[in-house]
Length: 228
Ligand code: DC
Image (cartoon, rainbow, N blue to C red; front, side, top):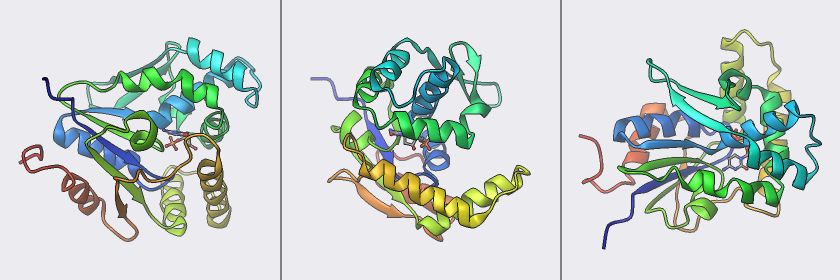
């Protein structure tokens, strides 16, 4: 029997550092990387482009089925996301895209429409899958699972710094409020709520430098798979 392709799932709330950590870990392992949040953001954006009512589950699910989402690394190794042929990398990072993603992600038919697309990322030599339900719904049979978290205050502070560095003026209190509201919506929805898989290693990164978080995630893998 051939061995199943290894999958490391990294789930957690927004601002937990999942994106940075998952990409760094995938690079170190030279595995494929699935940014499932970008898929939900892309569908939210495509639906908005088509003026679809984001609260209509069936209409958004049909939009998800016909939206072409492509991930491509450029020469500098940066990941670019194309939505219906258009480079939407920057647009997808906006708070508007995040809010649209969170709204459409609550619809069961939308999640169903995106199942196969996500599963197809499982390719040799391995996959690092970043999201909310990677270890619970998309890859329940993943061999390695991490649930990455950090306090809401720390996540708001990280986001505040990110936005300030970009020259965007923001208010820390309103960011904290937004993060708490999004957490509640993501954790409270009926389908694929944000929760750790029973077999996930819980990693609280509050106050931990990125390099240490990366090492702790890599330590979840057996020594034979870890980079030297
Ligand atoms: O990780 P992110 O911030 O890019 O995700 C954007 C939104 O998409 C988030 O509010 C919840 C949703 N999402 C989801 O429901 N399931 C996933 N696997 C990934 C993201």
